Length: 113
Length: 115
Image 1 (cartoon, rainbow over the protein chains, first blue to last red):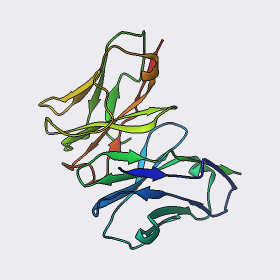
Image 2 (image 1 turned 135 degrees about the vertical axis):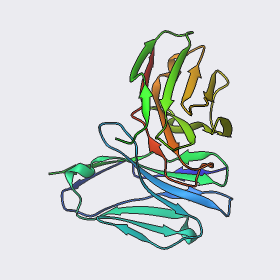
Image 3 (image 1 turned 90 degrees about the vertical axis):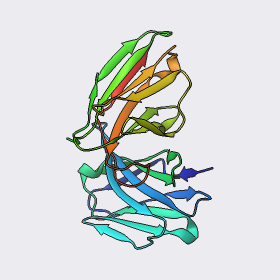
Image 4 (image 1 turned 45 degrees about the vertical axis):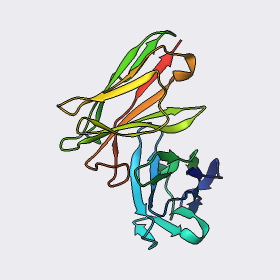
């Protein structure tokens, strides 16, 4: 069975602080995909990143970076110099090859001015 | 704007009733996915269609069904509604045939309230 754990239910930071959102996954598949989505207060879901299980390179996109470590089954997301607009619920998700798409419970990030 | 449209935005209905939610994918996308987001269950994948055919099934109840039409729009039918079906239902679309090939673009969702 596949499972995604986001242990941090809520995080509050002050603007310009760096923050890391944790994601730990479980799967028996050798081929799988990991995702991060953002859900701002307006409610829509926004895709942030997709990573396949064979690509362990870390990725940076502006203030966002992702650290994928198969050894610890983790796919953590860091926001550098956080901004108020980063306030949202962030979901980590996992999909095995051809199988179900499983979301974590989400981490609510509040960035205070 | 993701390019995915969903109607209606809000729906209020009574227990035991049946409703239909509609989704139009982005131009060029052949896959449509349905998700349910509720306080109890969180975000759950329900079902995926690709070019009119069912491709993957998640935690979809037997009371729920979906289809994708030749013009690629999709409908999610929810019947014998229960209070616990109250949720935000998202549709997403993608160019990919599978669940994982490409990013999914989400619609604004339909908020269903069952009273």
